[in-house]
Every structure is written in structure tokens, then in C-alpha cells.
Image (cartoon, rainbow, N blue to C red; front, top):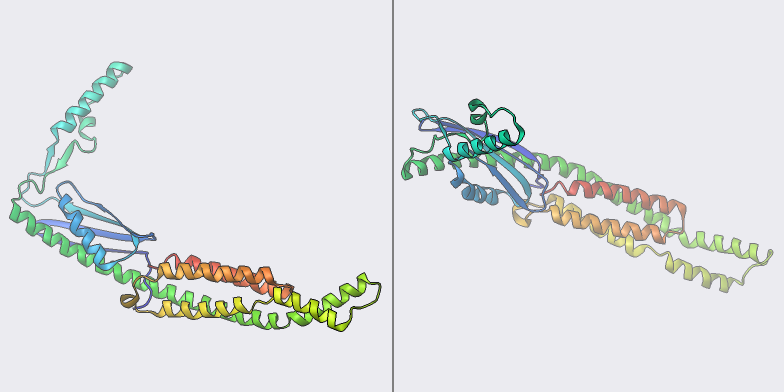
Length: 299
């Protein structure tokens, strides 16, 4: 197992003692593990175990998990929430008195959300409810397992894409190294030409020119940045290839590494005394930006 994406979708269905249900689970990018569970009335006790099931399988992502159920055979079906209906009637009367409009009709009040509810779980005793919830959670675990596989499948695509981006960073780093090696000679020729122009055709003594070139070359030396970029390339490859079970979620580490890549590329561009090296540095920054964008999709 390599990288895992934070994006995926899965579903599962089940039944128990005449009750039929369907779970839907989807996840997108998130800084931590954020779960939102939506269940019908009477199933609130599923939230805590559902969170435990998600935490056992995932480390990062924003999850939306929804449960839909069909009425249980033999259940009383629909019932009126008396308190909700009384509150709706009171509000309707107040609005009618203030506006002079006709009072709300009964069918309109009954259509309000929460006035009519299903009571499929109302008649269950404690043991029956526990058996029902256990079956529901088993079905949820199946949906979460499917979601984990979907995220792993997307992660494999991310790994291939990011591996190619790291290879391009490595290529551009090598190209920058070749251009940087030619900088001292280019600096010497440029400085000699500028001095000759300023001194009306005269030139500096060779030893003085060598001193000035050496000072400029020190300021333009990018070997340290190139060495760090090369080290970051190896670190990125190791993170992309790591077993997720041994090293934990790699997404945060890859995102941090992308910032380090960018820091070195910025310094390389700032030190560059050659237009070709600057162009290579800008190309590096573009690839690194793409790499960081993808790293934010990794768990």
C-alpha cells in the first residue's frame, strides 16, 4: 500500500428483522479527521461507534456519512409530533393575526419538517435495539472498507502523478547545476565588459578582476540550494513509496516538503546571475506548485 487519497465514495445496504437501510459514505480533503453523520430520528446512538469505525480506518479527511432506512414491517408507520405541531399552529396564528392573511391549512402544517415523523424504532426494547444497531454498524463497516479501497485506488493515481513531478524536479535541478557551473565565467566576461566600457577601453589588472569575480561568484553560488533540492527529491520518493501502515499519513509530510522545495527554488532564482538559470528556476517553481497541489489531496 502506498499513498491514499482523501477523496472517495462508497455505499452499502443491509436489512435486519424487516428493517432495510442504505449507507452512503463520501470523503474529501480535510486537515484532520472530520466526520458528519446524518441519521433518521431514533438512530442517534450510532454516532459514537460510527466515529470509532472511521478512526480505525482513516487519519485525515472530511467525511459525510448518511443513513436512510425503510419503515420496518409491522411498525406503526407515521406519527405526529404533538409539540412540533402545536408550535407550528401557534406561529401560523400569530402570522395570520399580524398580516390579515388566511390561517394556514392543516395539510400545510403537517407538511412541515418534523411535524410528522416515522417511529420505526419506537417499539424496540433494549435488546432488540442493540441487535439492530449491531447489524447497522456491521453494514457501515463494510461501506467504510469500500471507501478505504476507493481512496487507495485514487492514491495510486496520485502516486504515479507525483512521481513524475518529482522526476521533473530532479531533471530541472540537474539542468540548473549545469547552468550554475558556467556562472563564474559568465560573470567574469560580463564584469570585464562593463569595466572596459566604464573606463573608456581600459581594463582592470587580472588579479583585481579575479577578486571581483570571486566576490560575485560567492553571492551567486547556488550549490547549497541544489544539494538541498536533490535531498528533497530523495525524501519525496521515499514518502510516495512508503507503506502507509508503517509511516502514517504522508500528506502532511509531502505538503511540508513541497514548501521546502519552493523555498530552495526561490533562493536559486534570487541568486541567479544568468537568464537561463532564472528560467530553469521558474520552471522548477511551476512543477513544485503542481506537486504541492497534489500533496494536499493525500491522506
